[in-house]
Length: 188
Image (spheres, rainbow, N blue to C red):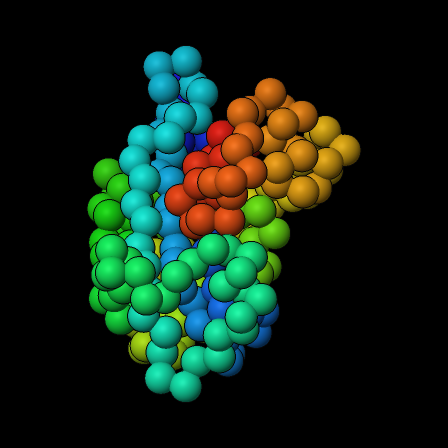
């Protein structure tokens, strides 16, 4: 049976979803990020091995559009939010990914996301803004479940692709980073 390293040519697929304060990675805040770590079971199928969700403190001068907050349902004043500054959030997210890359014999992690150009743009902007040096993710390659959903099911919207794949979908939970990352992982 192939290892996850063999299956993905030395890349460890890690599902990621981000929630932001807008659409511009240079100016708009990154507010929440989640990952789902994947593993291969005894039959060679991908399964979710672990998940992590972090709330992020907007960087100084970050733009946060009210429509984005309404869309995601993020309450910046929620006392249970406990946001981390960007560099600490990166450290907490990247450390377990780097450990899993080593444990699986992979060379790098590769982001799996629904429309990853958006998530990868925000993630890379945060890495650059903070000067973070230990980023385990490939800087431009990714797996795109929007494209895969369109190819396999004729659906590019995450909720519709998931439902077409027989995955349960709860619209009231959607647009939180952890829920969307989990559903993206199930779809992948």
